[in-house]
Image (cartoon, rainbow over all chains, first blue to last red):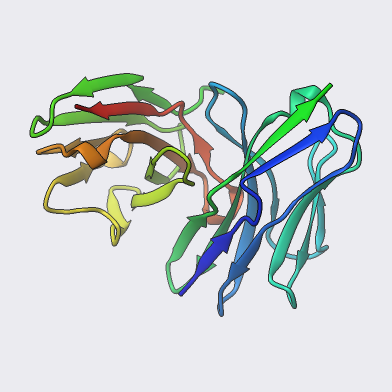
Length: 114
Length: 113
């Protein structure tokens, strides 16, 4: 069965430290990969996506994620976090099963401390 | 560009009552999704429309949930009768196409008491 696993439910980190939020998926079909962010009291927003081509994708606010097909992973990283990055981050996978079906992970709460 | 609009933002009902949520997607977006997000979990797809046709409703509890998308634009999601376990945030999202990623509304927080 297809699934998306976010290995950490909460990640506390100090400001200006690096962070990695992990995402693994299980699928035997081709996929599109997404990271969404949900800031406190706001809706989900697309952060970045991988469709094809270069396996390293970047967002406008310094996050990047790398698609690793052999490890079926799409980990999100940022070299130096800010207080404003405090949010919940969701990994999502769209599966091409004839139709397209999107599955979300359970989310990782990133808490950046001063 | 206007975002995905949902209403109401909050709703409290008693079990066995009915409730309806409304969604207006971004103009021109053919695909519309309804998700259920229970506290502490990721969004779970309930139903996906392509224009006004249903693409996927495999996780929609059809004995109590229904959804429609008239004229391929606005959509409504209804629960009748509601159960306590239906307490969740109901998210509507739309996308131009499958690979573009989805734009989400603010959601409707439903509390069933």
